[in-house]
Image 1: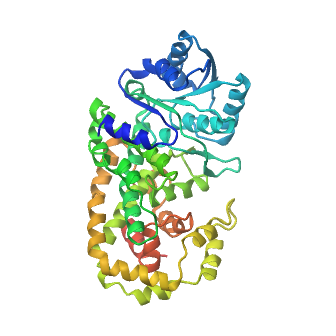
Image 2: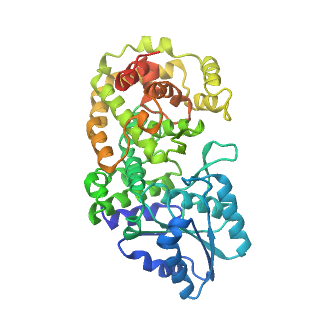
Length: 448
């Protein structure tokens, strides 16, 4: 991976114009601000108590010494662990508006602060700059902010990505170790997520975006190839890893979709968030959750690769394929009683194809399985290696390690296909009748 890849991705990004990653680069904050916000005379630095101490005060001083009028807003977390709740974004929005027209927000923090400022800036209609303080997420450079809504459910709010991203590795090294573990797990998720995208595109269930794919995947295996180096926070592997996180966000900007960076593994995390899942009294960080289900999906793919789909019984599959009206009835029960009762019905309608179209899809899979299998195999890493890398960086690998259960994961495997319009391997397994079988086997539980 190199600066050339970042430069190419920036050339296609819709919002971000500058991305600086390196050691000791915090001192460039003023120059980057001046270059990318010409004419701006004031800034508001938004941080939390920890990030204020590690970088916020220095950023404020740099901007103030450069002749800018600088305000500060410190978000005070209400609990031991800081999470991206919409009410914080509303507080930040009001703080920005209180400073007045022409102010440029500068987010100094991890993914939470970035998402809060991203949404707040979007609501006010001003561009912003982010100073990343932890290698914990790929959302620094992505469009949209993942926030817990006032109703209590996690959702992605539309808003532009930052105009400027500044990531000082020396600052990132001061973050708690679990944050890098979370980011590394989230980056490894691009492996099975990429397989989901390949499978969907091969079966005509998703559009292919060559540049979006290239941005995420071209340097991915290098970015996640040295977990020991990331855990030790050595310069070269940490740089590649942080670049990988940023590239994921740029691909999402390019496509205006999270398709390049997430697949089924993310939907398991979203299901936990919809249920307000906690472990030991705290919400489990997004990337930590995603890592657990990255391992699960890697094992699911090993089951898929071991099956010979050239012998698929298409007629038996079609017998399971219900008409749309019946699928809607099933879907309406999946999230009944939740804050999003229509979620399943919307997903079914978006992904539904009629019986003849499904026949063509399955016959195409059967005829071209050797080629499709080869492409999937080239994308994937062995599940045992995924688990090893999770352990090296200090991330959990199994549901019980984040306060869930393997039985709950089996049940959620059935629910994921009703989460959104994104086609995944689990959609295929649902129609082939293999979903419960494969999921129960890799989890080591009994089928219900």
